[in-house]
Image (cartoon, rainbow, N blue to C red):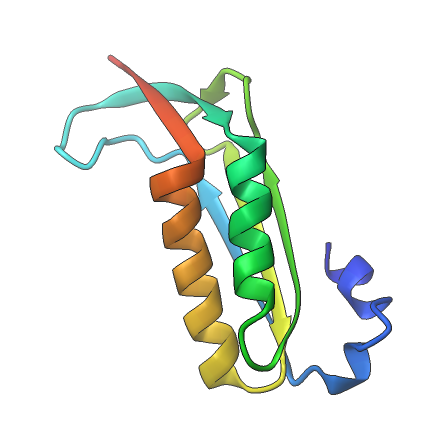
Length: 114
């Protein structure tokens, strides 16, 4: 994903590439032991979220890969999110906002408990 961003025609304007790598942890938010999870993705909403945040000041590119419709175990990669932009204030804010939007409006998670 980073190599793809480095090939972007506006990459010369980038001052930062910020990456998020979400993984399956062994406990749920409420503390129960997790054996794994699955995710489903609303691709239209994902497209809308990415397009919305790409229009933010200073943002060059946003790439997302989500491990959907797979039985994921503790430690497996769930999602990669990469944001490239001009300065850290812009890039950090957009990564955080994009991540939160994806988790609240794009993905549906089903956890499996021990």
